[in-house]
Length: 422
Image (cartoon, rainbow, N blue to C red; front, side, top):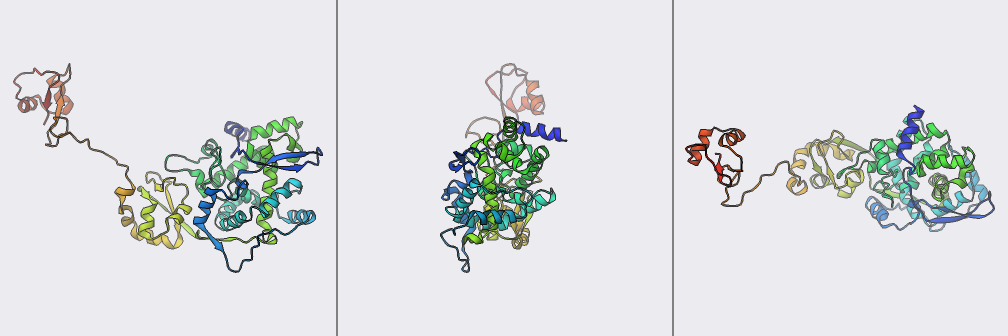
């Protein structure tokens, strides 16, 4: 089994899941005594990313009246940081160093508003992550991995094309069963992508038996990690091979540790969660016919942005009904309304929203003698080599019928002329 996993991950390549290219920060290396540059995960690079805020503004509202969020971050000593990290109940080792502190400070200062949004989003997404991690018996702290991958934005797309909460590249997603076509991108499906990510993480752990190496491999790919291990003389500790890793991966594990910290101790930094408009309880309905989300929104009186938030995998708002896996996720209190009105929903402005036709009639130019003319008559244009018997057989009519309709006494026909069939 392990050999199969190794072969599978080798097929995926060295790019990992997200293979992000990032901006940088400078930290002091206690190993070399020098300043070193490490890259920042893409999800942390800008607190003003327009696509991110466009998504969040449609699904989250302002802070609650009882929440006292400040604009400044309290001063915290190194010893307190160390103590808090040590007290997080985790299997994954979360040591403290200057790189970890810089990432914590980044979340607690200029990314405070983004953390506030992510805290609200976590109420919707964390139960999904926890269920999958629990079933596969993986560390629960991995539920914060999408914090640094996508900032909990299911429609996030990196510069390299990694997509969704878990930032799957297209090839890796296909290996783990995530389909992608013109209408559906399963990498954006919170549930399907989560189960795929958990399987991938378990496969990586089967190889490395070290969660920090697994996290690093998730970012840059197992091929890159294997090269770093060889250059480090066979060492299999993340912090030992640290200086042999790409700059973006050196920052990845510290960012993961910082994400666990800030999502656990946000109150101590005076950060408050936003309030989400996504419902806490949802259910799914299997869709057997093509359906546009706007049809559901209009007939059931549901906000279209809420529907998109619950069904982000549908790239064009269209649910294709020709797949057994096509589902519509709705708030629990709207499921019965959909079932009661489904005939009206599918019929509502179907020609406007669903313009894909099964068959199309070819219209004849008025007065022409082409096949299927407006008069109902059918004609065949005679080609060189055609015979009366051959044409009759092609259209499943008798030779006598052709003779009668075209006033032909013998078998002579001329190429270029039109022959009436019926």
